[in-house]
Image (tube, rainbow, N blue to C red; front, side):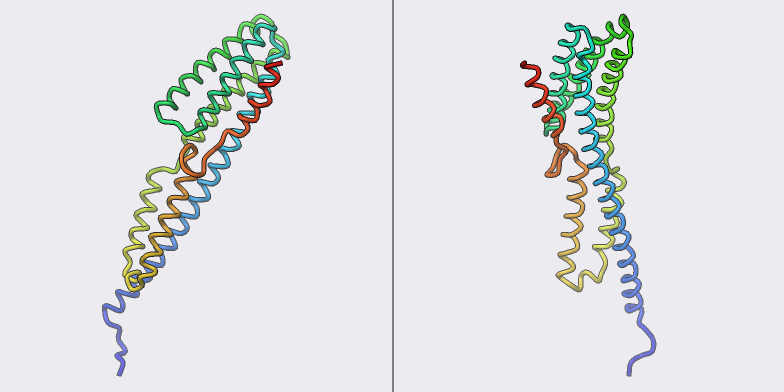
Length: 225
């Protein structure tokens, strides 16, 4: 005859089951939200790359408003700047990236100093467009850099890892070898994918300088002519 009372082990097992379900549900929600945020950041970085290429391309055209000598010097500097920006988007060592940043800072200063005398001595609506365009070029680089620094916080990774450990340590998983093996695999793949999307320079899913490369191909023939 079955006892109408449940044993303490049965009650404990059921309580653990409830905790496991709640933990895995919370983990699924956090992973889904984090994945969505990583995708949003990836898309934002791609939009900023496109905006940066557009800003440089427009400023290259507006440079024709400058006196001939200043226009030629500004275009040469912009071509060098495009090369450095393309290098920035490629996979490089930390030392190389710092070298690229230093070179970009020098080029930005040189570009601004090149147009500054004309802006001061020949103020006009067209020259104001040149100054505004250069401002957009420098600003666009700042927006790109800020978006690349905007990563998933380490505290969020720690929280997901802690919840995953709690869920993985649930007893119910140990009753099934399949679940015991599938759970860490799925979590690992999810974490890897989120980390890969959240890393704009490294990994399989990277931010490419497609628009900057296309801009360089358009500008170079005109420069050669």
